[in-house]
Image (cartoon, rainbow, N blue to C red):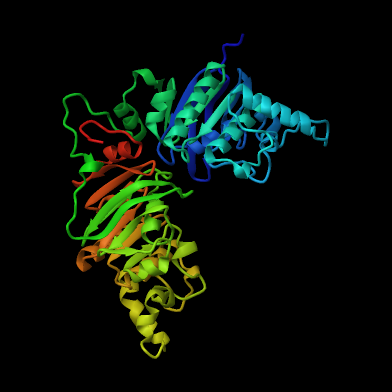
Length: 515
């Protein structure tokens, strides 16, 4: 019997233009073992998964199966028979049955013929063998998120692959479903299947993985058994800092979510928001923002950060809970009502929601105050728009050929400045900004954050800054961390310790931190 790893990456190197995504990566996945792969966003995890899945060819190095070189990239059937990947976002076709999805692309007949009876029988056998309990004839559009994931795992097992890559498999699952997934992973490992488990939730890695590999800036900086590793050491390896030594004093830390400060002059009050949004669910989130206060909300991409911002801004509805501005409830899922209540909104996707590409700078910047400018007669002169837009476009240093230049022709950073101007010109009492500096240069980032925090403090507005970019939070008065749609921790003493923030977003409490 071979003692070689089921799958091995040897000296994998990959570049995308000037970006050196992977640098000499060595990783082994052994039969009957679960290897955790962790790293910050941009560490190279997705690129490595694509190479191990046969979707992308490395520039250097080699992938091996049982000690032998892997087939050439793109030889789909040859790769699928050795390794299978279950991606974070479902690859199931909703309109097809479970059996059709399990054997999609592989078939069970000769040539172009499909043996439907055999396909359904084999699907039912796989489901029964692993205790999945889903009928092969069920349409996938009628399944839950958890059941869809089971279909993807069954598809991997049907190919005979003995290595399974699970890429953020719990992102859309409730805790009960997560535990059931862990039971299935343990069952697969016990049967001799090799598993690589990619996750941002480090507590999961400690729970089901025997080893962990840490990617940082495209390099493997640590490979070690989880049994001899502390949470602090793992976080430190991910961020590139030395773990705190015993006896050292930790930086000022977070307070437990239950002990969050209660504001008596809160402009914005969020009460028990719950939603099952595909962008990230919320499970009873509550918070308050005072006049002139800047509160950051952060977490992993699936934690519900952008969902919270969208619900507060009226861009998305919720299942239960409510949003109040100055004590008055705002109708859920109604952007127009939210704006009338005084909520300004800077969306995550500026192209989709931030501006109208074919309209000019001045027209975009003033579209939230058209009624105010037009007056009782409803007449609005172009010069009025230009005059109203000028103070903010100048303060934000919008670079354009003039107030009539279509915003679609501007650079991304200047498009974002116009979006911010459109929000602030309305003089909102609450500002909801979702990742407002994404895709802008360093100088523009500083200017935009300064404009938002400055406006909040000078005008007495409440700023809710929802972002997964920690550098956006440096000017906030408080930072709330969401994990799986719940408030996990609240940091109340700036400057905030970056390493502790990272640990909190991963669902971990660092030394000296309550959770």
